[in-house]
Length: 209
Image (cartoon, helix red, strand yellow):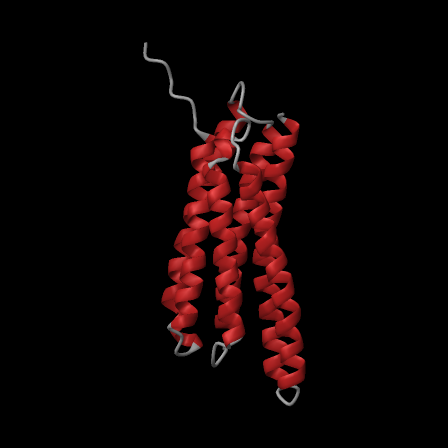
């Protein structure tokens, strides 16, 4: 009887981090090609398909870890890492949904700058995840994780800048300030979600040294 192939958690994580990069690319494209909020419906469908694909991968992870005699890392960490990656997908989808629900009329340059940092953060997570299966021996894994944190700090600096810009230069547009204050907070949460993923990867490294 052929031996049953062992489920590859690392491959699943790589698929999830790749989906995050794809969804971040959708966000940037939506902003670059923006005409009006109503036209975002097709983009929302595309983002939801990506997020749903992530849910299916997570379902497979949960299904296998429950019965796996010896997963490659602690069961709790297997689940937590899957949740962290899923949170990135959820946060990016949230930004797109709120662009639609808030009926924004234009995309400020600051928003596109923020979306670019989100994509760079996702790409940094993806690069670290590609090396994650070798984290015990890799010479580059620690730096790849640090790269994610660097982008999160860049996001923090930009968040402070864009919020100040709103209140200094758009004080006579209260609805604009209200909408974009919340949207920038959601975008900053995307960078935070990436950093939380990187922090967990660092913790897993320390626990398995």
